Length: 114
Image 1 (cartoon, rainbow, N blue to C red):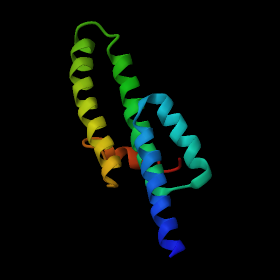
Image 2 (cartoon, rainbow, N blue to C red):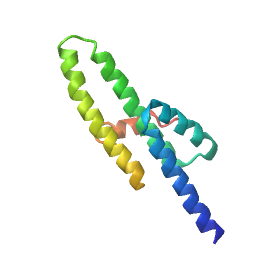
Image 3 (tube, rainbow, N blue to C red):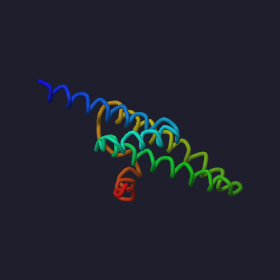
Image 4 (cartoon, helix red, strand yellow):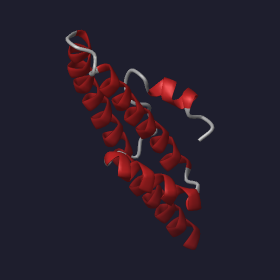
């Protein structure tokens, strides 16, 4: 009976860490540090997805410095990024290990060594 309780606790901890990863860039760092001790695969998956979203947001911010065309791309990109973030957060809360829309598969490839 202890093993079942331990599995539930580990799954619950991984879900919490995964959810924290989507809460701002500081939350991503906290989740990364918390997962270093436990090495939970579910949490690591969502940390990678959240890292991809953060870097995509940084790239959009840099593109937004370009007058007119960059501003348009930035505004549209922020709405798409918001949608991706909500989907990733909902996947983490619901315990699903599915990639965020559009770039989630790329994030898995790009950050496989993290």
